Image (cartoon, rainbow, N blue to C red; front, side, top):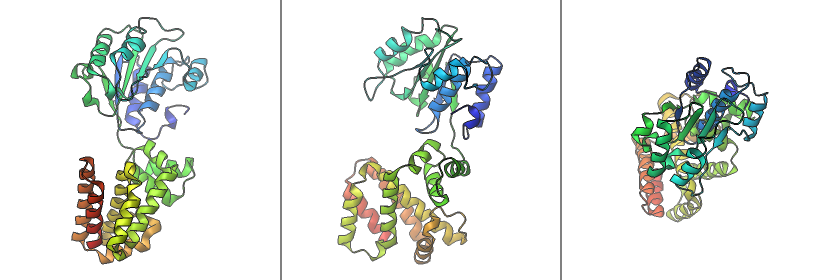
Length: 329
């Protein structure tokens, strides 16, 4: 990553950052809010690199000593806050890494920057400790809070930070990146970009994941043959699907995309909007056999299955009901 020009999407946030830097109107605290893989860390790192860049321009030069330190993760005045406990950022983490350190002036840069990933995990005590620092920070201090759910933060913290919300990236931009930068075939880029739902990080992960391809192939084999399957074969299929329990939402989302393809083709006969373009023969066949009502029942059943699994309803029972619904419609 050389600079903002290499970022796909998020133009509104990049414009805000560059204006803040060029007009010298940088806030002392920011919340970057977006789902996992949306680019929060990348934008925070670029923002920090820009602020510390020796060229003092709205885009980091990438070549000065400060930029090289930032890119290597060894900049003494850009601190990434860590936490030992997996599910919480404790008050001790904040006191040790932020509050007690922030009083020391920057070593070599105009700013001292603290980046706190997974800020949703801040305990109430940790947030209160951080609040005191955010309320009265040294002039050189800037704090970035990276969250998936900013609503989990205290309202007093939210009111004292500038909120930067990361929005979904256009599917066409994601597909273009996967094909041009990662050399992913167009049909696979279609699936990964549609499946990522505007999340570039997730699209990249899916495109390079053998596990995802394995889940996809398993789901496609089921969808092609479920109408001819006996109950005993469905039971065996559920056992195989059980090996993907940790990725079951991905499995169900693949089925959902398949049936949306079926619905689109049935309604329009247009193949251009089909995600599973390499499965067109089977998509057409299913569109001819299923009614509109049947497809809607299946899509509704998929949503219900996801909700039931989230509520810890018995996995085998949920999947058996779902697969029988798909078979009947």
